[in-house]
Length: 108
Length: 120
Image (tube, rainbow over all chains, first blue to last red; front, side):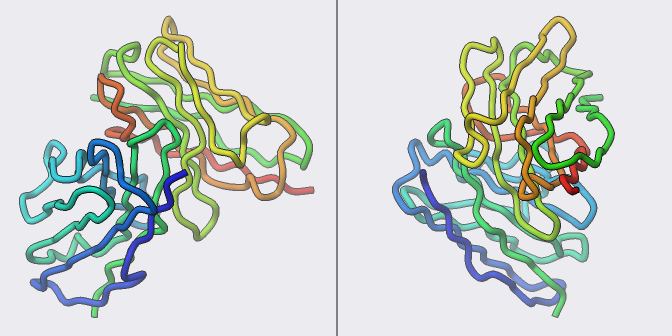
């Protein structure tokens, strides 16, 4: 199985800051099949990015995904108050789907 | 509106069985892969199982393989998770989620979750 590692575990930032979240895989992810999700307390996850860089419908353009192979990044260009949440990466390059442990973006 | 409606929460004893259900509306259910993903209290997301649109292929996380069975009834736009030999470590919020109309196994719509508590 592909193991995903996310860093940092917690990111303390202020509204307006830029957030850079990392997701590293234990081996190359087939076809860069890497997704990112946002989860707020008491809510189901929400898809942000698929295919490493393709924004889902309705996702603001301050969210962007990049990377390839085993190294991926989610960038939030300017944090809005509603962006403080937990972010998970997920690989789907094989049928044995796996999630990373998450990065919490909290208000500094 | 695209929705995934899940059955209510339950408390169940270790070793017992339980079937979760998830009913879809607002989209072409028989075109999309469907998943179960769980989240233990205070923890991250753990993928559990998937089943392809036509039901011809399914797969499972090692932690549930041999105990859980996923199925679907496209005539009822529903997906199910049969959970046998439940353990305390299966306690979690179980989400059903659907993928896009392809064989890409990401999840673009999620249900609100069913809370399963395994306790004596």
